[in-house]
Image (cartoon, rainbow, N blue to C red):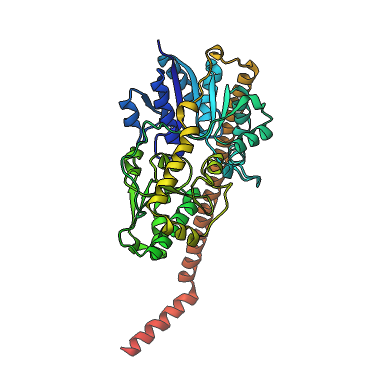
Length: 456
């Protein structure tokens, strides 16, 4: 019977992590494994199911405690599908998947789908974010790195950082770059001139500057080329969609044929239609495999056209561009204008040969060896997790009591105000009645009546 591997991530939607997991799932399926994916449904769900992969719609809600209720659900899934190993792909799922793995002693792999820009030395990186905003991650990360069969990093710089920060042995880590299935990415359309531009990106806050820069570059190129056949399509979804549309409008770019296409679950056929792809990360690897001209738009600036002179550096930085020099829109536009058919052919073929050698998924996939089929767990760690849960329950109970006491106090405060107002109104009414009944008021009323009669 084939072994079952479970892959866990937040959602099967467009994005670098998501497409990496999809590629991995399909490759593992080809190797003969049964694959179960635990994730929210997304654009890739149907495609995976068509390949016989089981997709379980699961909501990994981030919290500040070990989510044992969801861990129990995951344990039931382990038992139902006879899961022998788990691949953890994103941090928010740790709080339910990790306890399930430790309790059932199911071995797991921890994937670090992060680039160097997420682990800068400014103490405001992805690990700081989780540990500061959700303190439970201080123990979650320690347990993750302690018990992971292997910690997979997409770049050497990320591996070095994790080893230093969490005091991990070098033997516990492995660098496997973002990779693709070259059987999936095949092109029949030759790029002969540069008119059709494409941006593939999650439309999120952290991607905004990269997308703005890519749009600016395209517009700069159009100004110099003065060609009405140019167009830019943007593929992806996210909560920054309206911000990007506003950016286009505020810069008066509406006449430059910029279009939003939403999500796509068929990247090869999509990329096939274009000449130039601007972006970062995995989408550029896919585009090079489809023999397109690619330009790295880094987190903060444009890094230039990828060619034989910088492609190895680009691979080392996971096509983030953080290890490359920034280049002006003018210089890149000038380079693009100078690229003729012959140069296009040379660039795309040379780039393709390099990534074919280093970035095939079949050479960059990790499977836990059979002799490590059961996780060895220190029972004290599980006890501490349970103790942490009890502490969390106690804290929530205290918070609930505080909220209730605050409510009672506020209720009493409002009742006192209401009673005071009633008392004041009562006293005021009494004073008014005394005035109406007084001799002075009767005298004033008589004078008013006499005045009225005189006027009449």
